[in-house]
Image (cartoon, rainbow, N blue to C red; front, top):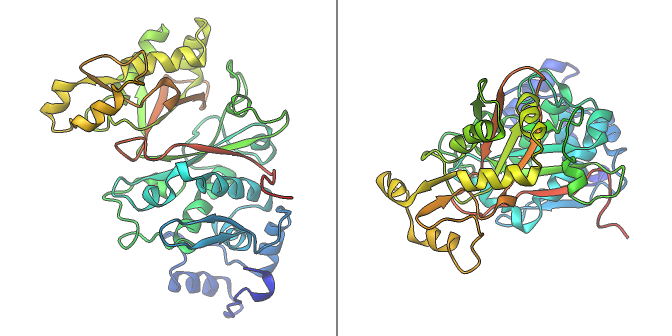
Length: 358
């Protein structure tokens, strides 16, 4: 919506009254929001070169549209600084890609939350946390960028819990789910480098993620031991599906894996090979489906697929692996997809680069 036609809501000249007004309108995630006064919205818009009415994302089921202006309003409400805004814009451009399955990932009973992973120099430029307490509280950029994503889903796309958002139990990532990839001491190429963007460009990767699984292993001293723990978490009967996965290795675990000369590809292939469950076991818990087995074992099946087993994902590339967290502690994590199949695929876009401009 352009600034000259945007709705202006007059409220008493009192901050608490303005916050209460936002609650009354149903514009919050349950927590107080920053009242989106015009000056703050204009400051946010200054970080986007396109007109405020430019549409950056459309909901395929409802046809509701996200304009640059609407994104800026919600970014202010979330507590973002203006320099965070390009990440939010790029994230919704990524989620607008058909492969992401924007409707299913926001409405399903699976409880998906969009996980944003920022890779490259821009994360440092805006002070994002890639270190200690990576997924926890305390960093304004991480917290408010993730929160802006949620507020946009609620206020623009009307994905309202209990009405259009049918998540059975939800997960805390629905408040905020945003991290930076750790570059310091990372022995592997950054995600943005493997995504083939020009040097100096940063990116945001969006993944429709389920709940967070902590993987603790303080005793493992080989890649097989450390990644064996991760693979077991990825393949537990409660969550194993054909969907994609995100694995964030702690620096301590990464040191063991990369120190033995393993590449990202080596780790992906190991996890894909070992994150599996036998068909008989899947049947014993009522999760086996002939159609899923046929998809995974069809004529184009990956060479690591074994007869009689269901693996997580269709191929090693379905597992995104990178490093994040503090130096101390044998704690890594696994984040599953929200769906049984590969019906939602992670997407990435460059930050601050207008991909559809003339």
